[in-house]
Length: 302
Image (tube, rainbow, N blue to C red; front, side, top):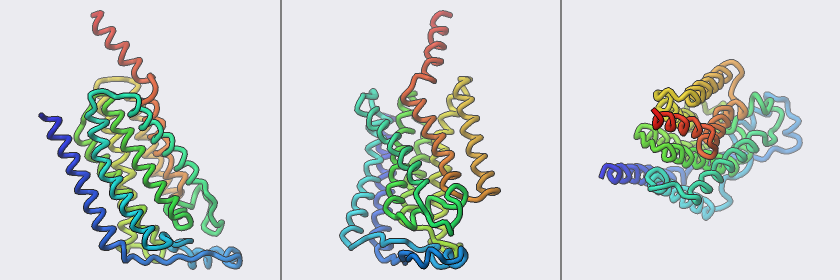
């Protein structure tokens, strides 16, 4: 009975998220006319300050070639958000994890890891700075808007489904973890639909929406993993304690680098890479399972 109530609650949560998103995209974002411009060879030879002043905050190509493309994207992304509620029912509340579910989650995880890694090293005009220390995922989105959308979708889908898989594999149904992961993975859909605002639009509603939802995705997505790791650590499982310390340390390192070095796609990817590695090890290897099995044998013996 409790499971049915929670399944319905999560379904309603994602239903509301999808409806709000669909209305926002249909009523408000439909009229959003964001400037785009393609740099010429002469532009590429401009002094760095002039180039940044001219192009920062502009798309290098139109987001949608025509209105039909826009509505196809709206329908696709809204339906995908509705499916998140189904993923909760089919993964978190599954009677048992079958091979098809394992393959689905593994493919998501590998695809997400591969794409965000590839995306983070795409070419970008040198005038914006070093790709490793200056160019962010959002800035790359100015030049590659559709790749940016794919980046957001794959990152959200892979983290969400594999966090659910991790919970179910370990018979954990923490409501707080599912809730924060849901909000985080939904937030990135705003980020990818509101392109980087650029230096001239800092502290505007557009810029705040872009930055806020990106941060919500980063920290709530990580929170869903940390909540589970802390749950296991409380049981004094040493490998989970080490994993918790490592993951939190990486998040702290990322924050320090953002303050001292500056934001970049490389720095942004650090916690994502570690999260992917942790999820893969927990979900698809026996590294953490062996310890549990040994403890169970000891308990039976004693």
